[in-house]
Length: 363
Image 1: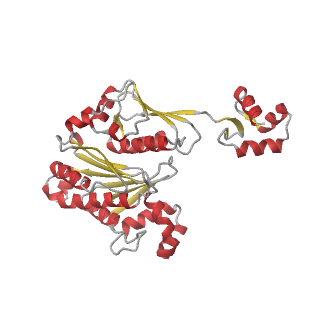
Image 2: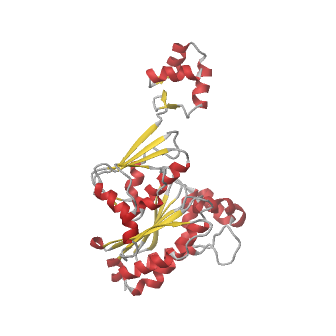
């Protein structure tokens, strides 16, 4: 029966169930059951018309802005979630020499590796974007990208990252974070570059923030897949971006199960909130003290990071499975904003963005 339905829909996509049942001479209730039970093969649109699920999808990153940010990443995935879909193959396209910022690349890198781990065939298409391809080679993107991923027109060798590694304090090439034995020197490397770009007065605070963010990603990873970290200084806009990512369960994924037992007040707050994950993260940044373990002093890292972000007028964005929370500062103190119903992306993906001119003006 499934083969007959597939053959019919291959020739007649966008057909309602009653029409399919009539043409195949089958019971409509049985047909509906098969269609709904095999959504890896069949999909229904808003007009209740059925078609075969395409085996591949193509996503282009572009838009009106020359710069690609994390917002541009999530906007391009607004109508499709490739990690949650039944597509066997995914092609991701960067066109027209758009300039990807580090927060965009961190999410792209994580998505590509997670798609590959899920058994999907992944292609990164940089045709016509040779400058972008060269930049990604320089910052070690391909050292962290899964080797099975196809890169067009040709995958770089990775020699640029090796040649220039450590020669520019404004760049920390993508470094792997092994879950079981993370490189504890990464926060120190990030601090050194941060200090070089921003000045000595921010050194200790920067190290505190970066160490806390690094520690939280490691603590809440709960996966055997490595994460990564990187830094980029943008001299023209006097902006520094630091990204720290993992591919595990995420902060909410590891904390939420223990909240009802350990933190009943927070559990009630989450139940009453429009989005429980957003409420939990806001609580973590506002008050801290939440941890999946019983060790004293744990669970205050993100709260401390938020306080330092407030002091330096910085912004922290935290991407979770299907939402993003942004922590920023205005005249009323620490503020939050969020975006919901985003495409699935496992793990925790943090970007700490620091504007030097604002920091200097705050002295």
